[in-house]
Length: 240
Image 1: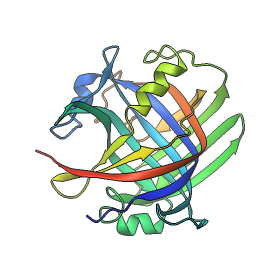
Image 2: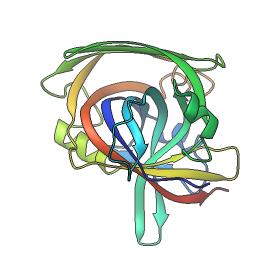
Image 3: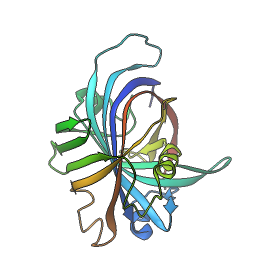
Image 4: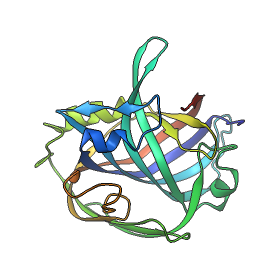
C-alpha cells in the first residue's frame, strides 16, 4: 500500500467510550495485539469524526473536501522494537466519502464502508446517527457538553482521559489480508472537552454474540473540535 501523509482539519471528533471485559476484548483482537487495560478494564468505543480540507500534507491550499466518518476501536498494546507500544485497533470503518471507500486499503488505511449520516449539533449538544449501506452497522449517539468528567469508571478526570487517548494516537485498521494498515494522528493543538452521554445505541456494542450481556458498558464521552491534524502512515503490521 502506497499511503501518503495527509493533512486535514478535525472539525469534530467525538469519542464514545465503553469499558469492556478484558477477555471479551482479547478475543476480538488479532495477534500480536492485546487489550490495553486501565483499572482492570479494556477500553473500546466509537470515534465519530468530521474531517474538512483533506489534502496531501505538502499542499498549502484548502480543498473544501469534507466527510463524516466513524471508526469502532479497541485500545491495544503490543511489543515494539523499543518496548511496549500503545494505540487502537479498528475493526470497522464507515464514511460518507466515496473516495475513501474506493481507495481504502490502498491510499487510506483499512477497508472503508459507505454510510449515510444524520448530524445535528450545537455548541452544547450533539446528536449523530449513521447507518451503513451494507445494513450491518448502525449507531446513534446523543451527548451533552459538560464542564467536567463525571460518572466514569475508567478515568478519574479529564487530564487522565486526555493523556490516555493521546497516547493511543496510533491506529491499526483491519484489512482483507494478513496485515494491518497503520496511521498516526499528529497535532499541536490537542484539546478535549467532556461530555455526558444521554443516549447511545450501537449495533456493534449491542450485539450479544460479540459482547455478552454485562461485558461492555457505556462509560464516558469526549469531544475535540477544530484542530489542525496530520495523518502519517505507519509500517504495516503482520498478523497471526
